Image (cartoon, rainbow over all chains, first blue to last red; front, top):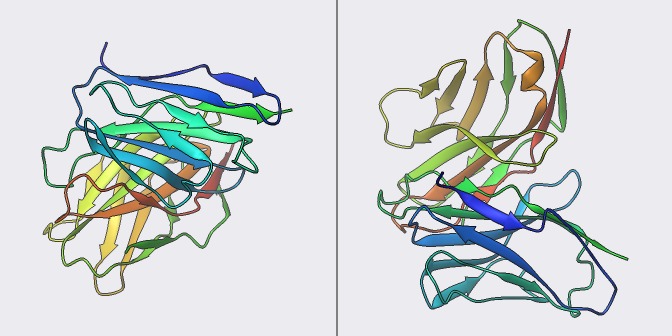
Length: 115
Length: 116
């Protein structure tokens, strides 16, 4: 089955530790995105990548880092510099073929809690 | 830059009734796309419907339709014959169509509760 997988579903980390969230897609999509969602809030963009080996900061990139070494993978690292990392993290992708009309497909999300 | 405003934090609707979820937007792009997503309590984001700014007709997908009023910059989602399974968060989003794979910009969402 084609889709986007995120692991783990729940993640707990101690304050001061870096943690990496996985995002993998087998849809052959060019573009991938990371969003953060806080309770009762919409989705805010962290980073996005339109092509392999290239990525851009979103609105709330401070304290996060990404890499895009392979088309199917776009891991997100939450560093100790991120002051309030407890949130729900969603990864998404889209084909990039229809000039912006493409639907963005989402993974199931990772809920990160800092203890 | 784009901005999406959803002014209804929460809505209630009786089962089998229709409900309208409001969405207004602001953009300087001459060509743009508008999207609606549903987010159940599980957290997954489910695509519902798409409207292009130059589409001649309002989009429809089953029980979902989009009331697109370009001059008023509104793209309201209409759900007909509400079902208990429609209870969820609903997000309106948009992107400019001239710039390819740019990320969607989302509103803060509306929580819909369907009452039996």
